[in-house]
Length: 130
Image (tube, rainbow, N blue to C red):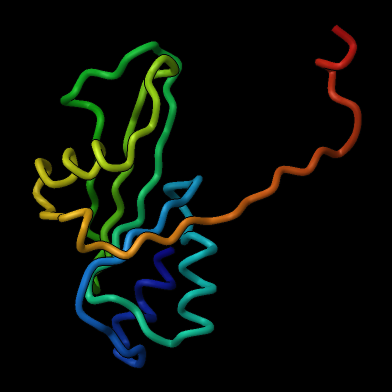
């Protein structure tokens, strides 16, 4: 992810007005949808929000611990939303938490990019034997 942000700082990519939100399963990596988007369109919004949900091993997460917002530079932000295992992810609600954390986001003005990920098994699961 750091290498991608450094490449953006080079200024070779055309940037357009607005905010793009890329959902990702991992807060540590550049989302695949972002990489494909840039490779094929060679354009990116002025502000990009990388958005991930992380489930904790507790039923509920206190509101003060739900959002971690990082400025990655070059108009890139990472929002990691922490939820308990009894809570359901809600992108619209989580964007209000991002707004409260200091990054003004209007969901109606964002372009959302969703990944399509497929999990593949490598053989029989121990759960099958239960």
